Image (cartoon, rainbow, N blue to C red; front, top):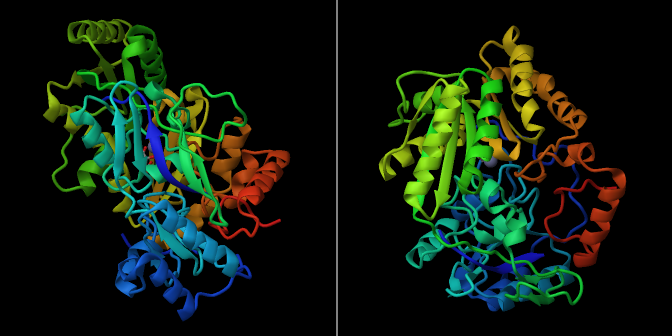
Length: 482
Ligand code: MLT
Ligand code: ZN
């Protein structure tokens, strides 16, 4: 399904070796695009919305990590639901495969074609349509860039209940369809729960209007989804704490949840290897503090009463010092310092991209076990591949570990064989998830069974078939062929 617009409620506040995307997958019996299809699209959308020149196709055929590359010959940029519907009607009748695409910032190859699928880009449907300041319901189009929505809402004293490092490029449709996690899930919960309704187009072009803004509607299956946006609260504090070991990190998280309770808006962590990498690989970045520390924990609070929140934060910090949970740290004074502290965490993915090769794992594991895996992987690689880098960071408050491993291109295959399937199997043994927030895409398609029993996978197939009987929408992703 193609999400067209979302409504929110309560608002505030590099070219390396290209991974074999098809991994031996054969192109299915979809039709091939012909000149007559291009003419039809031009008639339906107008000349400018049908892109066929190689330079412009380049962006849409490559994923953000430059790991997956498709070979689409046409990108379509509809400007309305009706245009999306007319495209899908044509493609379904012709059996042309289609890949819907938002900001193309995904990390698992889900947003790019695998072969020659038609790219249906939502980037021209980028408007914020309405904001009800009493109920906090916002309605926007699927191609609306997250940062643009944030800026629009901030003017009215609201925020989007979602924040991601890729906010400058990612789009709401992609955020909703992938149920994006991000930096403040601990505060706002899963994005899905904030969506009140969507207008969607099925594979055959049928428009589903579920764009309601009601909080309660028990009239059948809850197909509607929509964002709920919270009020922008003015009192924001941010502390960065240094810990000597992961046990201290765990105690700091427990203390933050206990002592700060309802005002916690983010608890993130990264190891010293991450901050060294950011400083090494990104010009203009420097360490926040002169002292180094094996682990850094970012604790952000957001509330409505500055002196109350600040008292709470200092109480928490004193408690941590007394209990010897943290060794040191800093509290950001003002926006510039806050951006510097957040910059260290948010720039880790960018710094990793500058390495020759990077393997990314996005795992949900019990918080107490989170860093064990990083250490085990480091140990496994240490002797044979001393140039490999092993980095741990992530959404500590949500038990979401981002384990990233870098290595020189010459060692790529050997390192990969040590990592996989070990990392995924270790995670499955802990009853974790092999994809906490990045999704399955192309990257983890063969590993889905480690997080979902066969009965549920079969049900997923059936559900997909209801909306897309010909299988034209985003084929070769998430579900392996039977
Ligand atoms: C993050 O938390 O920074 C994102 O999920 C991106 C990443 O891990 O690469
Ligand atoms: Zn993340």
